[in-house]
Length: 69
Image 1 (cartoon, helix red, strand yellow):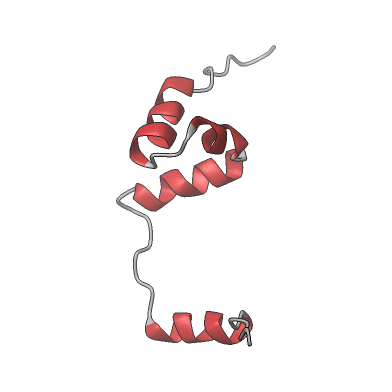
Image 2 (image 1 turned 180 degrees about the vertical axis):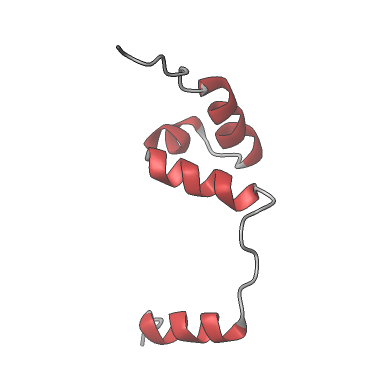
């Protein structure tokens, strides 16, 4: 027996992507479902918001800026 799944909440997804994120339609439709999920998660109350200086330093070492001369 198949279980009924709720349809994808397109109205809410579009409202978030176009309204909250203020993406242009082209950019919204170019997002993958995973990218949209992470963007939504960043706005949820339970999303982690603590980003320490050590985290930034580690990222800067892993991904240094190119120096253009």
